[in-house]
Image (tube, rainbow, N blue to C red; front, side):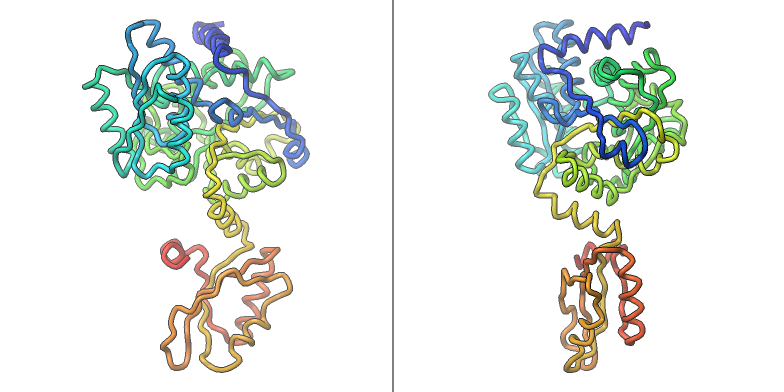
Length: 415
């Protein structure tokens, strides 16, 4: 055993003063579907519903051990890191100042305040995270505090490795494959560092959101690079630039073991785990499960651990998640239909709908045309194959239409 593994074991033991090990649960539903032995490491069941409490605890503990007088900790976060820091500030009875963007949902602000109590002050600054981060770092220097990075910190990486320590302790035998979500890289770097020593034959699969593939970009460039136009939907893992320290650990990851999950497909996983298993996952927490289908051939008969990294899901987002899932699976589409301005035209159109088709949206876009009017129409059906039949009937009846389901610009403007 090397120094990192020894430290990871000791760190994990110290965490028991704060919270019990998160469950490692065999999932029969997924195991049967993929003909594999699939386990979920339920970080969504930690006290703050994510693994972030681990790194925050270890970093704060070590800073205080080196400098007992340090009583101020500062971070910038709109989500799980903020909640982890708040919880640990209360545990150590130190002061925490947490900077959050002005646009942070009230639910996350309230939850952070609940975890931190009187030990935490929340400051809402900046419309964008970069502005929030700059304000937090400037304040930290002026106030003489210690800035707690969400991932690019050796103590944080060390703390996140406790996920792997618990995993090996709870399994009957080492896993063949571990699937990890990747954002800034703290969790994956910590888990990799421990498993490289304690279970070197375990294959690691890294999963990024398609709209925030910072590890993929760094591997291609040979160093961390900033990626433009990050899609923030998977807010727990949508990071524009992977950490310098985390990439030092992950830089030799085989590119074929780094996968991207489409944001809309992640929505399908969130809904399925909620409806079938009663498990609430945030988008980042669903990443590892989402790619099981991509790996179906290689995981058959293997013992696989998926790390479900977080469950801080805002249910106000549920309609959006359902909408995106339906569109990705092909059971909901939007059309702009050219409707003749004559009596009976709408009835003619309705008669073309199949028994499983349902109108979810109907809106005239142009009402002044003399002969034709444009209609925005959303249709839900039970099977995606029904749309091929519907469009064939539309064309046979000489209805002119345009499918705008995947037209991002039009869909954002009209839908």
